[in-house]
Image 1 (cartoon, rainbow, N blue to C red):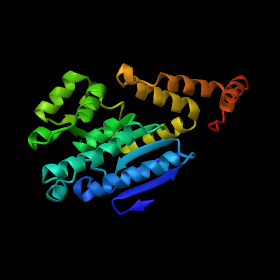
Image 2: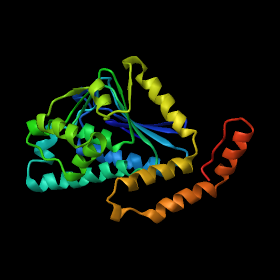
Image 3: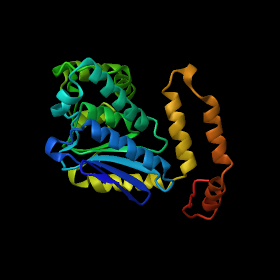
Image 4: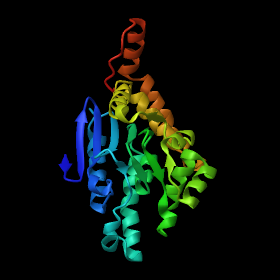
Length: 262
């Protein structure tokens, strides 16, 4: 599945979505956001896909945020802003609650909406040259509670407030120290590292990954909103599966297990 600004590829059980707007540092239009939502739905339905990687084209940016050149068309009035936020909010929520592991492969600028996208992912892996910023305070933009909560959940309130109030850029090393990214990799090694990392996850037991992913989502909810029965069912599904038998058998036979997801 491809359009000129968004590219979807599937390799070795991993779905790769590329933001392909390098002349604008992969700034994202509303059309690109909605194409992303369609691609994520396709990958969710594909049982052969076990991990999803989001990345940017061109080697200079992951995603540099919203395409400001489109603001007069898409975000010039209160009604347009509400419509834009509602539609993009659904995409962020889909990625944040996606049932399979998601990885943001960050190579260069990760700014504004791109940062919000990255913190929707489960894992963030960046190159040494990467830089991060939330420049809303320099543009008089407002961010909804959901976006700010993701930053708080990722970095904690103190660092997140510093990040938002100053609108300063931070380096890849600072991002690692703040817990914004989980892995920092040499520029030239990033693509191969992410490929190996994603494939390592893809060969693990899908039912276990699914359970841990959903339980992680429930943990971040308010206690009264958590679906505890769902969590118990997902754990039970692991123990009732053929994969559980295969995992035990492979351990005893000292070989790698071959998991099928049932």
